[in-house]
Length: 306
Image (cartoon, rainbow, N blue to C red; front, side, top):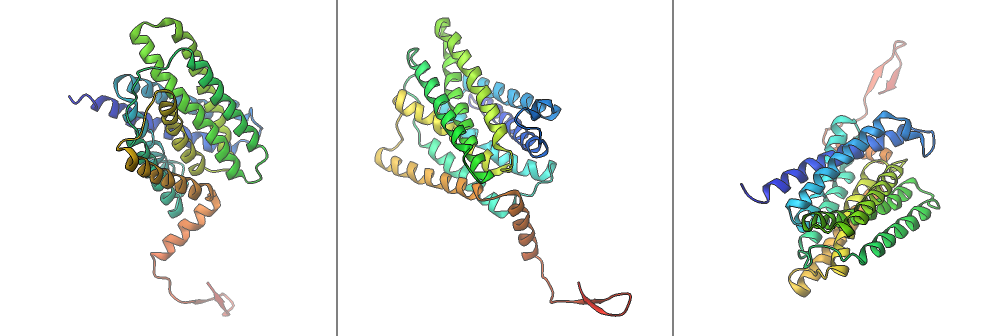
């Protein structure tokens, strides 16, 4: 059996679980009007929590058996699975712009992470972990506070999703470190790392739930999908000494991939649910020959346009 087959399969199932959780979260946010604590009283929200826990558990196992450079790019499959799942199960049309944005975001993210070299160090230094956790939580708090001033629901959702992605991304870095601590029997730093993972995961879950309120599914999910591994990659480059492959050409290709991912997020951030419905209707009509204006007879015999 190929050594990479198991982590790849685990990542696939994890992405499906994360996608299902995102769809349920968006539906709960769209149908709950009881404020920030309303979702806690909805069974569906706790189902999303269970799916997120399943996805996170499979992600942890994948990190234990596979390299970070493989596991993190496969996380981009979440949005690839979420869009058709939302169309099939939630009866929520995505529209051509949604598909274009998702493909751009996924392609850019996959290219960016493919160009990132594997880490030189297997784990984080114990002294660096409190600083990294505090920095990410502070950045997430700034984004969450800034989201309160956003006038458009989509902009607010993207800001909250970026905060959630930062928390999830650093949580993945800490998870990899915790796996190495466990195998190396470094219990001193393991306790703090597990507590940091719990705080980061809880913050990411609450922020991602808030990001779906009024913003639809595509834009917040795309933002989380991009920010999550980008934060992990930045942590690897700044703390673990990782660099892009192929030197200067690799850096230019990485910049191009980042531009594609940004274009995808911008496309999705401008797509509201109502606009997605209109664009889907236009696309369907465009594939069908529409005859000229016809008239039908009413019961009184008068002609009336259809």
